[in-house]
Image 1 (cartoon, helix red, strand yellow):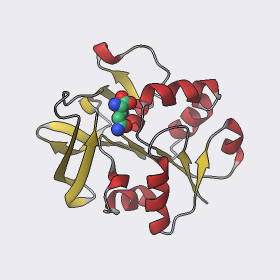
Image 2: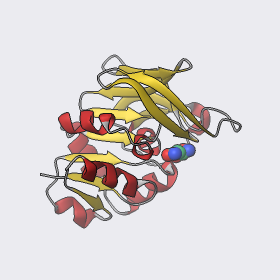
Image 3: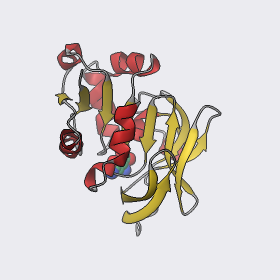
Length: 189
Ligand code: GLN
């Protein structure tokens, strides 16, 4: 089958490039009609979560995708994608914007302050390996994780990678660095 990459807004092309490097067939989800094509995994790219959430609802894609994720379809969610997966947002972030809300975490948006709007780190990710490059762009962090959620990585004490079943969420942009290990883990789920 194939991987569907949500392509409403944000950094989806880079994910497609990384998947192509791994020999994985991918196509773009731009409308509800695209949901009729066969796919068995999903990438939620970085970008602007409020814009993506509103578009998902307007285009009637939110509910069908939520159902498939809840049934266990593997998802790789990066940055804004992680915000869309989060069941809860930090109180000051929660404007009631539509989200998939399938992962039992609380996420804070833009969590590293203005001066650290963008930065780079290298850290270990459980199940992935050591020295994984991480590019953060106005990134979120996970401030609370439920019992079924596994913390995979921390940077300076902040939780930046989590997994719940087949849902994989990271605060950074793995598609912008040339390290394919996280995408490999995703394809193995
Ligand atoms: N700050 C963005 C948001 O809140 C996420 C940034 C990103 O995806 N790089 O949606």
